[in-house]
Each structure stands twice: as C-alpha cells, then as structure tokens.
Amino acid sequence: MTRAETKERNRRALLDAAFQVVSRDGYRAKLEEIAELAEMTTGAIYSLFGSKNGLVVALISDYLQPHYEQIEQAVPADTDLLDAVDAFARHYRRSCDAPDATAGLSLQITLLDMAVHDPELGSQLAASIRTQENQLIALFTGRPHNGKTVTPHQAQRLVVALRALFVGLSQGVILGLAQGADEQYFADVAHALASDLTC
Image 1: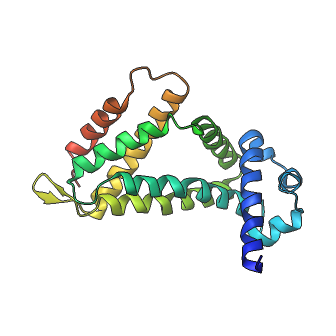
Image 2: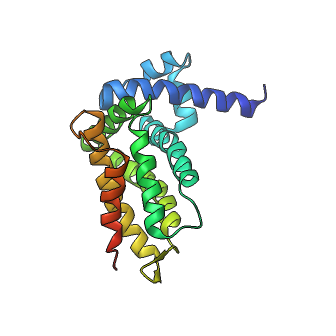
C-alpha cells in the first residue's frame, strides 16, 4: 500500500469513527475515543485534520458530498426550473426512507448543538454547508422559468428556502410527525415555492 493509500485509509477510518462518536456525544465527543475506535492515536487526528473542529468540518463535508452528488444525478440537466425542483423534492423525500436517515438526523441535531456551544465551529460548518449549497445553486441557475432564465441570485434565494423547507419536513417524516408528507407532498410544496420565483 502506498503512502497516499495509507493516508486515505486512515482518514476514512477516523471519519467513520467520528461519525459514530460525534452523532452520539456531540460537543462532548472525545478525540481519544474516536482515535481508539479507528485503532489510531490522537496524533493521527491532528496530523490529518489539524484539530477536533477540523475533523468535524471534514466529517460534515464527507457526509454531505455523496448526497449532493446523488441530487445532481437525480435532477435532469435539460428541464425547466419547476421540473428540476420537482425531481429534487422527490429525491429528497426518498432520502427520508434511507437506512441511514435516522443516523443522519441524529448527526444533524448534534452538529447544531455543537455549533451553539462553539461559535468558531458553527462558522466553519456554515461555510462548509454553503460550499455544498453552491452546487444546488449551479444546478438551478440558467434554467427556463416563466419565459425567463433563472439567475444565480434567484437560484440562491430558492436554495435557501428549499433547504429550510426540506430540513424541517424531513425531520418531521423521520420522527413520525409529518404523516402524509409523501413524494407528491414534497413536490407540491417545493413547486409552490418555486412557481412565483422573483428577484
């Protein structure tokens, strides 16, 4: 195994361990436990991620990246805005039924708690999430809508609204508080948000 392969293997083991420990313990997560679970030392964490916050930021990027890649695959490139939003909404709703949905919700709540207790980490997490959201903004920008073309500014406003809507709805679905919120419901409310898109 090359040095680069060993480094990536170690990185992966630490991220997987961090997912388990951080999801459970939040800001009280101990680097020693993460390192032990990954069968490494805390020195490896500092070497690869620089700090506990660096590990947590890498964790959220690692967790979100596949989801954003799946969204890009689920949303056809050659459709108008409403069809793209419809495909996005349906994909998001299906993710609520994924085997890791509850673990993902636990991580989401834990990260919010960590951000409240550590404003510096909160700022780093927000920057990481904004980077991922830029992929969605690019996904919606340039699509035809109401005889015009969606601008980056319009796409950004829509992405913020859709994120807030879907995060809340998906929490409700996973916790059993949103009976009837099926794919069609997600698509309908997303469509309503996007239909009157203005500046």
